[in-house]
Image 1 (tube, rainbow, N blue to C red):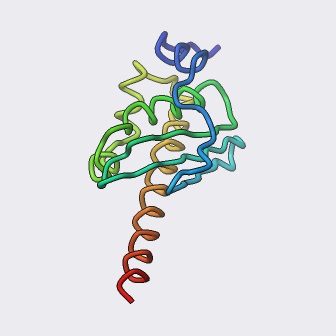
Image 2: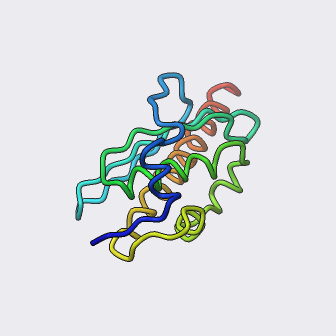
Length: 132
């Protein structure tokens, strides 16, 4: 039997920032082929800070909770600080995860980093186009 912390149950039952963001200026994706979970993170970045973050997740209780906590930890942070968020930060913020579900914390970190990297790529392209 898998036992979840109260924080995990809270973020599973009432996930924060769970919605599609059509006007996002960055998007990142991560999927776990071993269990079928998938996460899409949307960012609205302004002045190098994450002003708004949302996500859509398909997965188990732990995937939903870790996605929610990832969004809570990243919102309002600079891109550099958001890139420094680790799987362990997410697990600790949720008061732990069962060993069999620790891999779920990788979804949030990987999708967040993918979104930030995609944002940086798109702004480099935009700056080059604007200067021509």
